[in-house]
Image (tube, rainbow, N blue to C red; front, side, top):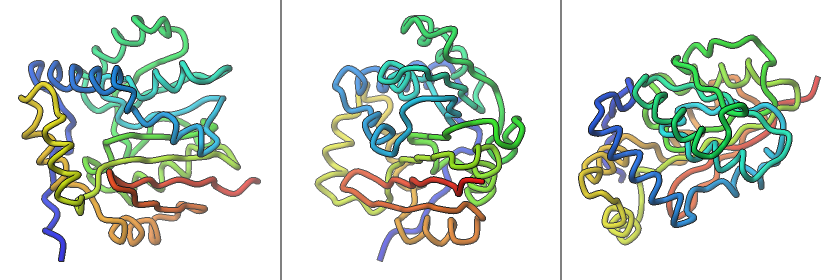
Amino acid sequence: MHTPRIQETTEGIQDKITVAHYDEMQKNLCRAGVIPVQALLQCGITTGSALEIGPGPGYFGLEWLKSTEGSVLTGLEISPAMIRVAQKNAAAYGFSKRAHYQEGNAMSIPFDAGSFDAVFSNGSLHEWEDPSAVFREISRVLKPGGRFCITDLRRDLAPDIYKNMYESCQPEEIRPGFVSSVRASYTKKEIEEILSSSGLAGWLVLAHRYGLMVSGRIPSA
């Protein structure tokens, strides 16, 4: 039996000190080569216009831009403090013209239907206030035949994996955030139940040692 899910923040990371620590952690992961950009490429998200939900400091989407050609990125982020960091990081990558960040809530994505070739997110699913509503919005803003890939932690991590991930969190100040994120994350069964009533078509949920991946392609017109 899994421990009950405990909701984390639905407002993102707002205070400057925590934002700075989270940026440093993500930068460390990026330098270590463990930002899971390969998952996007394997899902067929290799070019075009993409929406990233909850980009945080931006490394995931920026690494995707670096790995693709003819691609542009829009990041939808609920935290203004994170947007400022993401913009700074985009400039450091040399992608200020390819990456744009906008404040907003994914339960009501501020873009027209059929705006994007792809939608992706890494590590923010457990913070979504209403995942079913967000999945419906993803379906709405994708072009016919558009692809999606959502990756996150899982609450039922094996103890040895949890211990390894916890001890790998640097700086150490970010470790309590890791704990609360795991507690707020979902199991494969829970996400499948949410998706079944969301209206998003073509999805598949894969559970691996370190987390979950929701991926697929909506029908073509």
